Length: 206
Image (cartoon, helix red, strand yellow):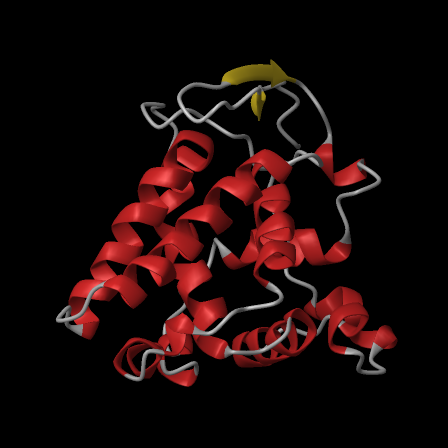
């Protein structure tokens, strides 16, 4: 029997660079108009380990070859969908703008300085993005930073990235991969557990 207990998740708004407001609501986000099949797929990715994807997308070369200096035209769109999936809120532009600003500032800083090792630059990226995202994503921040790094290192647009990611995990999601497997879809579609957005000091386990 499904658990009928109602729990709260939160919407974050009113961020001014120093503080934000957190509004707790009860909502079946799975039925929200904006919460698409791709949002559900991205949410499910946080329940599995990235594993060999780190090598598949050659994350180490992304830093060693200074590929992080290239402009990623799909970053804002990827961030928008990712954050929407994690906090189940449609309007996340403030958060997206904040994190894009952090990533861009790292590139500007690199052009003005030299001598940092690839490993040091990678750690700086993780630290600064984590600090920017944690007020909003709390307990899922560390994994979010990994997923962001994977996307940037891939050098792919969102559609191509999704196809590689899904194929690597062995999932069958024709609506995303474009494969004609509608008859098999429900048998292979990863289930998305009910997710509620808790504060970091919550006693709930992920």
